[in-house]
Amino acid sequence: MHKTSIKITSEKLNLQECYDFVEDPSCGGISAFVGTVRNDTQGKEVKQLDFSTYKPMALKEMQKIAVKALEKYPIEKIAIHHAEGMLQIGDIPVIITTSSKHRKAAFEACQFAIDTLKETVPIWKKEYFSDGEVWVNAHP
Image 1 (cartoon, helix red, strand yellow):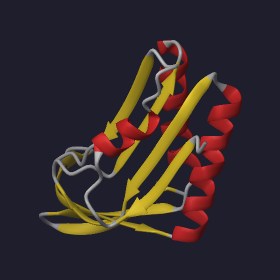
Image 2: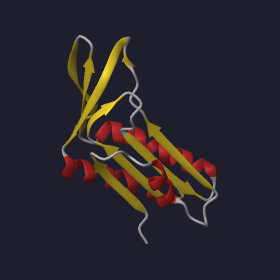
Image 3: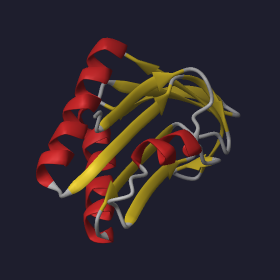
Image 4: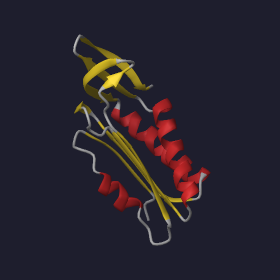
């Protein structure tokens, strides 16, 4: 049985797909983190974001995070999905879902996964403002 679902796609991310993957009759809790594109960064108005990845390494790092979360927390399953390409305000660049018998592990594993993803996965974003644009190290 697969315990991880890892994906990087230019298609719209689907929260229901992530939820359905981690849902399990043995689990009493499902936790989800949904990142959305916000309309400002440090007081500057953001128009859109462009996410770029080094896909082979990013997928490998995301799988490592999922495996580590399964080892570190008593969770049953984990899904980590990330978008690539141009995203508009309100679009979803990342979804992480986890399931466990009890809620605490699902919450903690979900937070661990998003925090670690932002630190270690080679994903970059370009922020577009009304007066220019800048590449940001979204995730190193």
